[in-house]
Length: 106
Image (cartoon, rainbow, N blue to C red; front, side, top):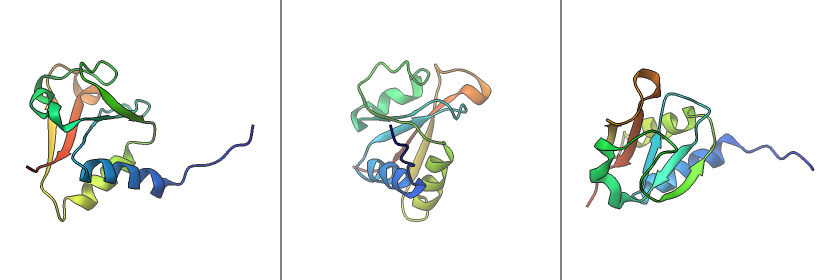
């Protein structure tokens, strides 16, 4: 089996496209956990959501990458869009706390 590296820019484009299409992306402080992509219809449930991997809603995709990719995309998008980063209260504590990230919209 041949190894094919994944370019950082392709991961960032995937993350950006999900956010610009209204999806929620959840992350926590553990870089080994995936980013969870969740449908926007769950926004009101995010403040009481639990840990990564314990979602009570449908996960559209798990993106396995360094979370720095998400943070770079969020930093780039905040120049033009209103972003939210909501703490998921029923998640772990400190570095393991889970956050839901999304762009405000109608």
